[in-house]
Amino acid sequence: MNFFGLQVEMWQIYTVIAVIMMISEIAVPGFVLFPIGVGILATAPLSIFVTNITAQMIIMALAITFSLVLFRKFIPLNNNKVQLKTNVDHMIGKTGIVQDDVNNDLDKGYVKLYGDSWRAVSADGKVIMKGSKVVIERLDGNKVIVRKKNSENKE
Image (tube, rainbow, N blue to C red; front, side, top):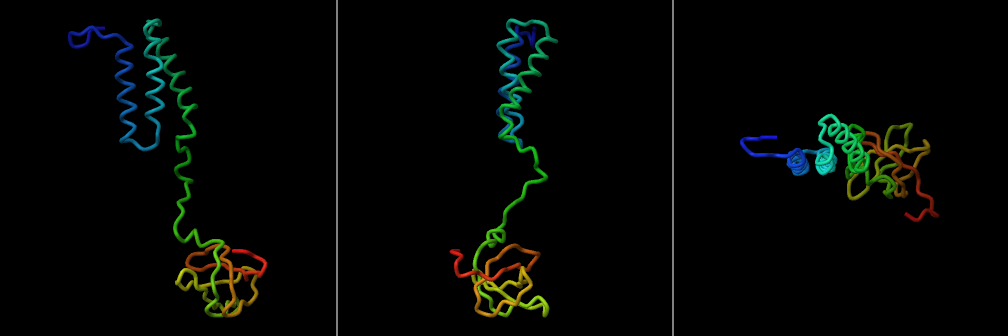
């Protein structure tokens, strides 16, 4: 193939495209261009022996597919389902102290954790008295759902 007056072989073109794809991975999120570049690079030496362009494209498609399967554990497939953990999520399972009686019927109660007061609701609906130790089970908006800490729990 003649390219700007230079004699260029297909394997050289594939190699340049593959290297560009792999380097471009730095700027593109998702780790997809690198495996595609690897698949194209795998096709380059085979193009020396297989001169039919249709056969080369089939080989390239197979090589790219194999490369994507090989690298799939590095490719984030469920971007919309990724749960980002926040500092608030780390409260779950931690022990706090009841500052104001937790009473679901009266819609009152506060728990102190890490120096902050949090509106609290009893998980089992029982009243938890001031000064009691509680375990944070989950969060509901700006409220913590708590249960009274048993003395045998080692948290």
